[in-house]
Length: 398
Image (tube, rainbow, N blue to C red):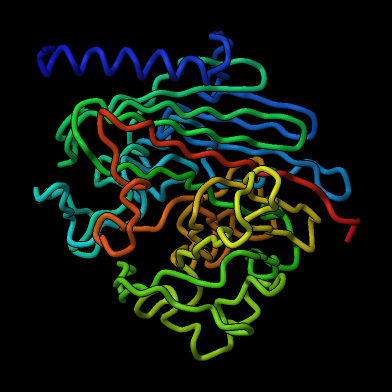
């Protein structure tokens, strides 16, 4: 019988071999002067950095043919690691995205305590104080239209059991940004849930009428339910209905994000003393029977009436977190590719939207949800897989 150490080595080699079959041919195109790696296709151009395997720029032509940089980030890759606020700009949170109640969970009767980093150390957010989007990934492949990053997360890091090996591949095809995330638990059972923590402003902060994203329309046709949370956004075990015409109804038709901001129930909707959204919506497609997530239709559509840019989000994941950027307060700068000189070059409150494709949040602490096969992975299991496609189009010139 193989020793545990040798078994781990074999698992790692197997994971690497399988991952290479998902990755494009190796190339060394290199980064630009700002430390960014470019990939592109017709109608779309993106820049990425190894820190957090993050997207830093995404250029799309608007309805008037003007190129807009529609994601938040910094001008230089070196700034990400020194920014004191670390707002998770465009990175891959891991090894477990979103929040973990009491910074603990139980697997096979064993309780694990992970490092807390939020709400006076009452929970763990996005993998802890040194989660994946605080670390540099390795660039293992880079071509003109695709880039693959990798990370090896050691056993015990931030308190998580077992080693995890992950590969993150971003690919561009005409007007589409594709994401594929793979992760293998090579030595022990462990929680794995990844996402893309991209902040969106579909106007590139260049709408002269408003610096916010509250006039964007959002439609989530499969999301008639959401996960109930307490005042610090920890799931409390309940699944809540998004009643038609309520503040959380984005399923019955497209609605402006700010449409219900005058309704009393919007206060506290994103936590105690918070107005807006920081909400995990479920994606209910099972009633349709077997389906192909690539063709059944987007789980979400976000559109700006000013730029005319629309993004349709397709994914294999069963939940979708929406954050309306109520926590922004004008301290986060925008890039040189964005904004207007006539107003402060910062992200103002509600100036962006975060849309996270992922599984049911904190399901590792809600066994009655029966999400173990989507949240817990061991050496004998298939890899964790996340896929998504962001498809861009433009409406008629506003």
